[in-house]
Image 1 (cartoon, rainbow, N blue to C red):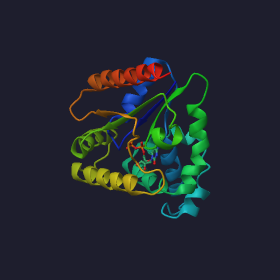
Image 2: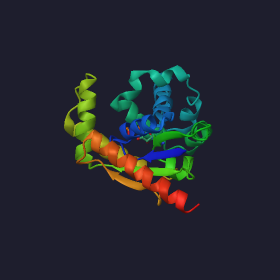
Image 3: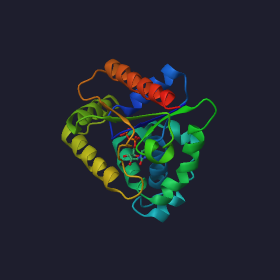
Image 4: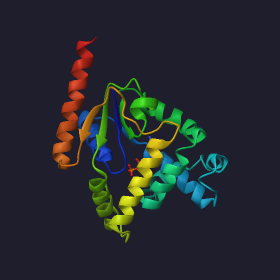
Length: 212
Ligand code: CDP
């Protein structure tokens, strides 16, 4: 069973995806980390993330980088959203994600284009969203806990900038799959969001079974 979880920054999609993976005993891939790793490599090699050729030159990262907490920083997220707009970067990461999705038994993947590009055939799809203010509040708290001193206003501005880049790009823009279930986490606790996510997945699985 493949479960696709998409949505904008700090919408709660990672938390929901991890909980679904635990509930259904499936492996989970946070695909944003792949773009963050490329972006971090671009930075370490002192290359320009806005140049596609520079990003491609940095696209072969060592897998140990995926565990580096530096990938979770606000800067890494911003740079990731710049490199992720390059079609050649998306192409370079495509097979790895498809292979993960299609492993035996299935998987849960979260990102921006899982239900639309990576696994349009997914058995269940969720689009997780929340208002920009609420997402900024969550991300601000997360970053603060990591020791960051970024102001709330800066975090909110960064989230809006990232939304605009992710939704406005030509290559696999952030857009809801037509057959995705919407999960608005704005006013839900984590427990309530996870409960609702499981209900939405179950409903899609039932529909799928009924349609043969
Ligand atoms: O955790 P957060 O939502 O802030 O970010 P992320 O999921 O780690 O993604 C970082 C950036 O990578 C996003 O702003 C997107 O530009 C890009 N991304 C993407 O283009 N496609 C994906 N499947 C996942 C992430």
